[in-house]
Length: 337
Ligand SMILES: Cc1cc2nc3c(=O)[nH]c(=O)nc-3n(C[C@H](O)[C@H](O)[C@H](O)COP(=O)(O)OP(=O)(O)OC[C@H]3O[C@@H](n4cnc5c(N)ncnc54)[C@H](O)[C@@H]3O)c2cc1C
Ligand code: SF4
Image (cartoon, rainbow, N blue to C red; front, side, top):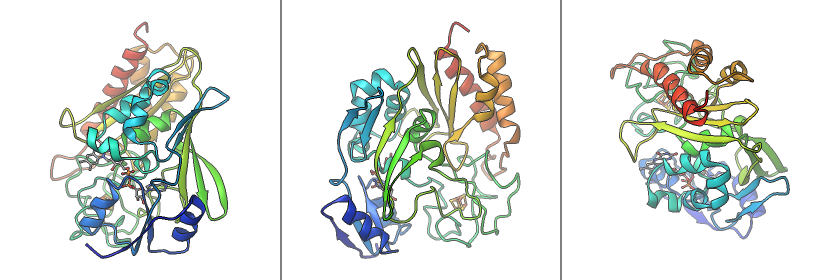
């Protein structure tokens, strides 16, 4: 492991100033992702700035009926909170489907959505990877693609040598639920505070796959707000994976079904960011959620999917899998349809 300095600033302002002023500095939350990357050589910072004790570790009621979650709240605390379990079951279920009890005790609300891809080549410093080393190429294209993206990719056969190629997926379960809940992210940066709507926090690779989010270097997540859901809204998270536990999603679905029919759907395991299924939502607006209607909406959503061939058989199976997972999730939430 490359040696690095460790700092524990007195407050958020000092932490932000320190990281923003040093291109080689990074924030440390629970460390369950970052410390692995330090050991693997994927992250090679000069300075690690511990923010775990700087942001709130509380979940407070907002006047509008929503909740504000401090960035230091652990995944275990959040999943166990009675208000979250009753009002936002999609979030509690997503959290409990991720990692293990020990990891959830350590992982934070600020760190979880910013965990990095589980693409095996990203974690293997001996292979070219545009996300880890911009401009080096993408080993996943033509390699093992079972866990990779089908939406928001540069094409069915992207150029593995091009600097913009990346077909990685975002790994966080919690983030898929937060995208469906239209959560709001409080961000503190050198220029002050700003609010980022959660569905806009993560990026597609575009021309710079090394950037996972719209956050600038030195911007710190201090809290996440959950807006209230309409009365009577139901929500759920369904995750499909290779093992029953301790595995990342092949595909996952976070769904919110209010009484008025304004369905919200976010998909995990299919793109570089949690994928809000806007086309399907549009087609399902006001519709009775029959299996036929949901299937048709998902066919429209997935019309632009670009399955990737691969030495492991590729990831074309995700198209059918995600469609069936959405059908099953909505059947549970709206059995009367
Ligand atoms: C074996 C294993 C299995 C796992 N399985 C799953 C799974 O099934 N589903 C799932 O969703 N996750 C899974 N995880 C990932 C786990 O959920 C994440 O590692 C964890 O949520 C990251 O949170 P953290 O606080 O430890 O982040 P850290 O490791 O501390 O940080 C992660 C990143 O966020 C940055 N950061 C941290 N806090 C902030 C902040 N407040 N503002 C700005 N930047 C910040 C850090 O600089 C770093 O880049 C698994 C992890 C392991 C090791
Ligand atoms: S898919 Fe992205 S993360 Fe994986 S090897 Fe290619 S560039 Fe790297």
